[in-house]
Image (cartoon, rainbow, N blue to C red; front, side, top):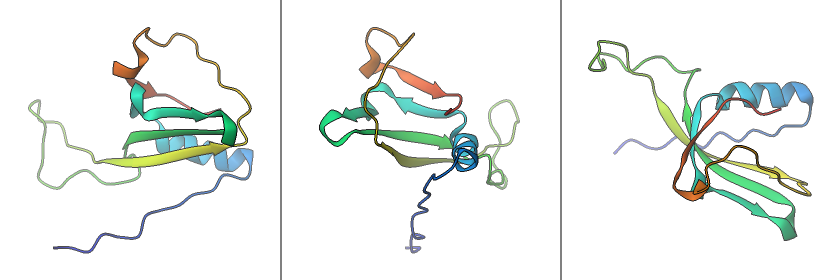
Length: 105
């Protein structure tokens, strides 16, 4: 069995860092049930299935339509110091929904 690489850990400490994180998470799929706001800790946590824009396509693999197959990677993200969370336009049954992350601003 191949050894797993050490997990990548990123810390955002500037607006520029946030732009990089946003680009890395663009088009991630987030199950609605995998978002949690821990009010007491002022922490917002999510698990995303990230589209790997930064990785090459899978060698020799193509989709049914003949397009190259890209990688996806599960990742956990936490935002610290969150005093409140607002939602807009989420489905009524958010926990059963699959959400597509467009950007973090």
